[in-house]
Length: 557
Image 1 (cartoon, rainbow, N blue to C red):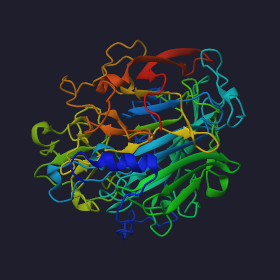
Image 2 (tube, rainbow, N blue to C red):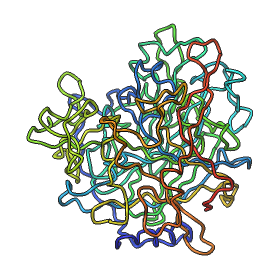
Image 3 (cartoon, rainbow, N blue to C red):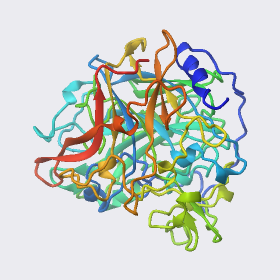
Image 4 (cartoon, rainbow, N blue to C red):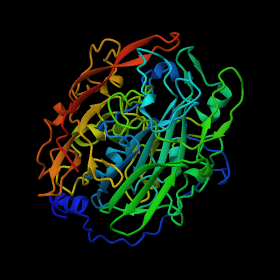
């Protein structure tokens, strides 16, 4: 498409149901090399203490002994209509990248965000806060203010994640942050469900044996497949290398430019996501059910067991409001869209990155950008620093041959914080992610009444005291103390009379009706109530987000 005109086609497709004339033929997936000495049946799980694409925990120091987290600018959607917390549908257009030629002069989706996702709060009685043994699905009786009582039902969070094509292939994500392309040119998606093995009242965490195998913040994972059946157990105790290895014969692969209908709803077997590709006329689904190998991890803080409890994960709430949140997460989200940013950093110079499928050296330590090389490029190039690890050489990539590191970018100077975002120049920069606000109701024809934008920057910034809000800035500071060069934001587009509105994410996008004040859209510092770790049920206020709520919603599907 010509510069600045992607949105015209996207608007028509997202709202009117027309189809883009993209080539829908499947592209043969490159064979992905497995980890040395691992068979498809070998146990593999993703460790949230290393792979920081898990939901950001509000009290990360207590859980992991250090800060573990990342940047997740989000759009949140609210409605008091029963069912809005467990039944919703979006329209999505997958963005295209520039050509792979001369990649060091361009930017790509995987450099800006290793994934974007749609989220939902779920019941998980073996997850934080471990005070009650039941959770009634799809019910607002689960709303419990931690300031009033610690007896909130156990909560998990689902992220339906989409993975851009072209860079380092799965299953590298088993240990590395942000490295996980399914195919040289096609997208894939997966259902991710996160629980937290922590009792904040007593200050107890999961036993060390199980924590080593499944993690404190544990992770169920299953690709969206064509037949709706997982290709291997989804839970982190029984998961294998096959769980994380994409299979083009089983998994739904999608082309850049494809328009999707994304549906999320509860069923008797658990929450079910369905992806209908309106361009290729293919579909895929995944149900978070025991039959698909989804399971809770039994909380056993004083023992040594590590037991999966087969489980059908159901949505927690009936409606969606600022009160229907995951009370252990830094964000306040329930029904949400988020873009994972702040992971990728360029690594350039005369010293080659050691070739390794898993971003780890022979001793199991993360490969770092070698001494003598520089991070960033062009005017942003500078000596490497402490967050330049889990690095991969561009020679290992499927199609976009760029050297890069995928740690959480705490210096706020990586690709996500440069002017590399979608801006209409599709020769040099990717197209934006385009999506409609969700709709709910029996026929998915009811709009959400309110929405908000939220950024969890306070929880990430080294200068910020989240207990007081002191030193927290909406535009984060780099390691050199200067504000980040850029921070991305949402824009809204009117698709025409009777066709509603949709969002794009990036810079000031040509054709947008509004960018909501650009970075000002994230609003003001927000205090949220959390249980104090080991506080016997006492609570405290932490300032972990900036947020602005719009009532009524300024963008209706």
